[in-house]
Length: 419
Ligand code: PMP
Image (cartoon, rainbow, N blue to C red; front, side, top):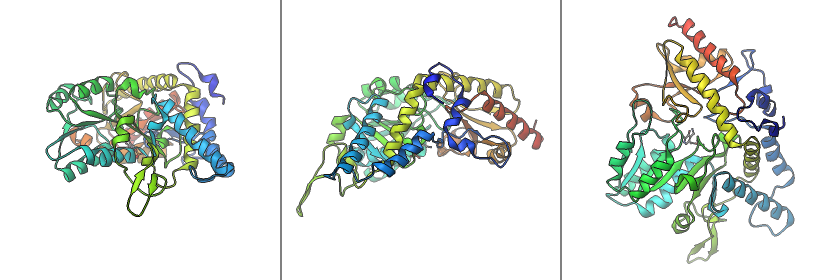
């Protein structure tokens, strides 16, 4: 289906499913698959799968070294993917895009390289109670190793960042604030422009975990005013094994390498080594060459729809799902009520039924959701929950999927006698 036809505010997600071969696969329930777990990882459109196959089939050689045509071709395509990522997130320069494996590696890169250079004993680092473990554990490690203090910005009962608590903690002039754009456990969209302004006024750098925002809404690093941004390709229709770190150029240039070895050097002698320019300084070893081609195709696909349209589509589906869940007794949705502050990630509990049982019953109804702590155990602890069930929506979902979700909840409640 030509995505150009879908340049409208709200489009028919089911029409896009023809682009995704995984939806041709029969489900053991005998029902069409209602895939509501895109926040974990998203299916791939044919164009992405073909781009990876084409890269391996017709354009494959190692990059940045070969003095022959095939390698030049592979290098040009790899660097083209870097430019696409830069454009997609509004980065001032493609030299500020570092290819990594995923958002986790991007954050670790900052924690190891920037952190071990700039954070010392007694310094304060801020994270939040809302973070995925990927934006929490690396800062704990940094604090443990350097003797720095680590504090967490509180979250409110309705799943927002507590901005009063943020202001109070910023008054202690932390070195850094590590914050998520969209919570994968609550669906909350944080007001990052305001948060960055407050952090910068207090002299702190901002590391933004954008794993759940870049796939779903327009993201512009300049507008957001952050200093580093982490993303994963696999959540935005691209391949697994590739992600990106964006960082302000002067910060990246001042940072030591994260990993060392081939590709990231300028000159090596037995006495010592000088580094390549950024971003190659941070890309030791052979990178994910074909995956970069797939990520480029994923960006083309999303840009073909338009990120404003993606956001409008998901916002519409979220509102429908939120209202439908609110009408069901015994079901509680976490996170802010307003669609302005809530992405299409619905984390909920059904009274009297453990989320793992919920997900198992849903699977029998052809509805794929995630159940557990969502790599955000402090969020579960904050709300005194062992786990939640999470339904997350993307471009290929439609109102029918929302109805399937509601029917699956009803069926679960009937089965467990909690209706
Ligand atoms: N941050 C958030 C908010 C996430 O949802 C995830 C993935 N669940 C990550 C970071 C980590 O992404 P990855 O596993 O691709 O490194």
